[in-house]
Amino acid sequence: MEKLVKERVIRIFNLSEDVWPFIETMGNKKARMSEIEENANLADRDLFSMAEEFEFTFITPKKLDPHFVNYFIKVCMMREMEVLVPKKNSGLICEDILADKEIMKRLVKLGKSCKRLVLTAYSTSPYFLHLVGELRKKGIEVRTPEAPDEANAWTVNFYGSKSGIRQLTQINGAIRADLKMPNGVVSSGVLDSARIAANKYIKENGVVIKTNKGHSGMGVLIFRKGDLPKKYRECQKKIIEIFNGDSYWEKFPIVVESLVKPNPRIGGGFPNAEFLIKKDGEVKLLYYCGMRVDDKGVFGGVEIGEEVLPRRVTSRITDIGYLIGEQYAEDGYRGFFDIDFIAGKGGEIFVNESNVRVTGGTHVYQAAVELAGREFMKKVYVLSNNNYDIPNKKIFTFDRLHKLMKPILFDRKTREGLVIASSNLLAMGKLAYIIFGKNKRRALAVEEEMTRLL
Picture 1 (cartoon, rainbow, N blue to C red):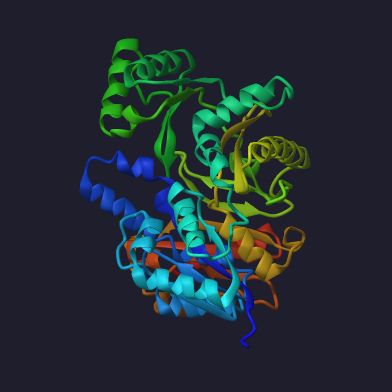
Picture 2 (cartoon, one colour):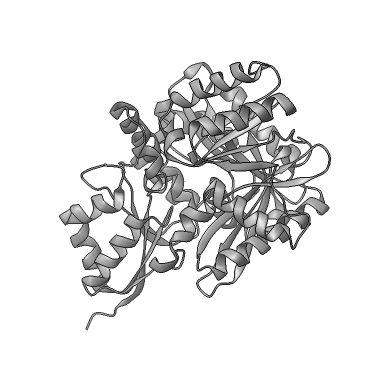
């Protein structure tokens, strides 16, 4: 009798499902399809979130470049990897999987030939939980180590929203004085929000306005001195005009808060810590980092290493992260989450938001553990960029870029060099990468050489 393999890991890249309420508000069908396509282009980068696995099945909304897949397998010393692509890409990949007879047949076959399937995803969406339920109905044992149970899945959207984390911070701020967010309110309705924002802008020479559930810089408005009219009525009118440009401002609550001037010397002004809540409820710190954020508040990448933050800041943000994580765990959340902070120029540290899912730094962390070991923060300095604009809008094939970068590609012996993190993005004139150096100076030197070669 054939011996049953213990388990099979299935990874589903469902980024669009995480921001589906946001995508749904896009009135322009072309813009919506373009957003779904752009999200699908990030699928190959998510392979690095699986860098520690020896073998797994990867379900992606878009075909992967076979040359890039071979490169990933070689870099991470993967044993075997299977890629499945549903026939349709509606943005709801778990629904597309259920509608694809061949993929369902394959999953059932894997489930019958293994003791169990281990399903992980970018985010625990309702669609992911529906797929898990349907597979279980077919008699397959499914384990979801990085997801809450259905009854506790509300935690994903609630704590991953701007208003949810603000509520949690305000409640716990009464217990811990250093747990605070920038001064602000949660408002509903475009008119009231514009009034509050105009008032704040005139009084404070700046304001930040956020939709409750934004995505990749969309839904965040940062106004500095001189950006808006000085007179209240004109200022309010201008903000309403901006709101009217995108329908999502009407759909979600709006957070209006004070503009904090970040101190770039502390993790670029935006420290961050990422955690994992295990199935038994244990909150585990994965890493702390500085985030690379542009003037518009758009996240670009991370810098991870022991020297990235002053010790007092590291201690503060990890303590606060544990406190918040324990609340998430108590409410039933399981899986990855991070806390984004702002380091103010006055020495204050503010909670900015929380991503209750896989984050823009998870793949960097997992790649670093695989390529430089569990204690990588003591041995190397890691920096990443998720969407570097290639100069002169040049379009590279993966092979051409790989050849060009050969002198600086990552070397397992020296634990230094460049890892190309995506092939799909190259067609958009963008490069996603991870760089390893023995220290910050060496890592930045590799990055400089990369830009010179480009």
